[in-house]
Image 1 (cartoon, helix red, strand yellow):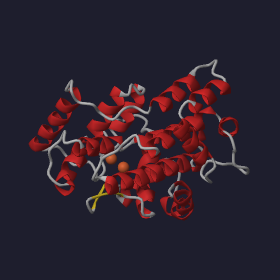
Image 2 (image 1 turned 30 degrees about the vertical axis):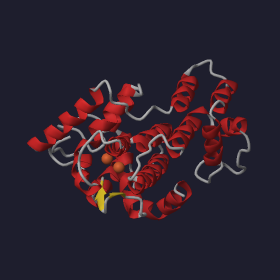
Image 3 (image 1 turned 180 degrees about the horizontal axis):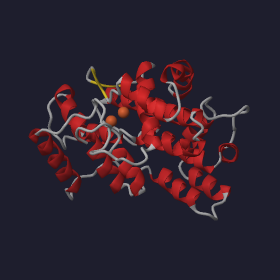
Image 4 (image 1 turned 180 degrees about the vertical axis):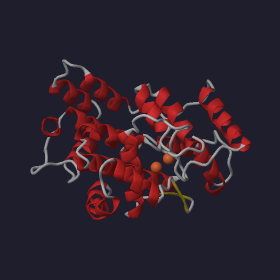
Length: 294
Ligand SMILES: [Fe+2]
Ligand SMILES: [Fe+2]
């Protein structure tokens, strides 16, 4: 974080108070008696099964079928217009065949988050805004990279975008459980704004997600310093996607305050680096959002 050409407006520069907030979050995640949200174990298992070279479709189907709720939600999502091809799959086996393993892993992640990995009593509205924001941003990040002819990176962009604000969910759960004291949600919003990247990093580290994914989430508002080298296309797609999501009513709104705003100039520049024109993405993006968010 900090001030850099890559930082967007959702990335406030750190004041001494902010350092204190971050230290408190780090202390919380280190405490032996703290129980952070459990990882969606079926999603993790499906992911590692899908990465094995000798993985068969049957292995993945069996894993999914052990979790009836997740299997049902995966099938429901696989039938939605954002995933289904001409004919919607009717069984998990068909879904795996149609979508391919990489896309299926992303569907399973989305299903796991929708099925309630995160429960925060009293913060349901905020959690719903987060779900819409993450789902829309994920579908848009994939759409943007496909449009840019970078289809090979589009499934990775989907997962990074789906999980980019997972730290917000972790912090809402900690607030609901009384692990963090911040008064009302309104009073907690500045803390969430400052600490959600760090919380996302700590949570996904506990979940043992791949390090490059942890890093992508922990720096989704931009990183310190000038890279000089190749700017990450997944990050650019995420910036464009967050802007498009906001344009179509899927901003992240907590207690009436909008977070994670990517200014138009920044999104335009990110789109240009991908060889795209932001303006012309606006209209087709509406359809992508509609198919993804229900
Ligand atoms: Fe964020
Ligand atoms: Fe966001």
